[in-house]
Length: 101
Image (tube, rainbow, N blue to C red; front, side):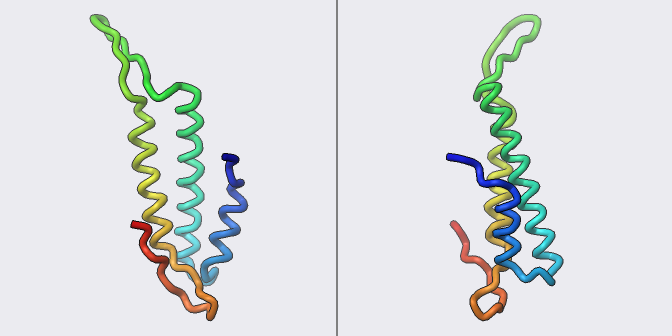
């Protein structure tokens, strides 16, 4: 699946919120930053693989890539932020998005 450009993501969210609400604008900025970090981690995982080899003086073993744990945390933060962004309805009144869970 092709990545949606960051600019399109930002424009989509900005079209969904009240731009006079600075809190919601900040949430959109944080959302975009988290998406960027998520993509960087995914790129690193594609390059390194899902496991890394750890070597010390006595042994060598494989373990899960440390970026996997961070990726899971980021994914949870992105979903939580999506759910907390107030979107405008057709009457331009703000409403909270229904929970995704």
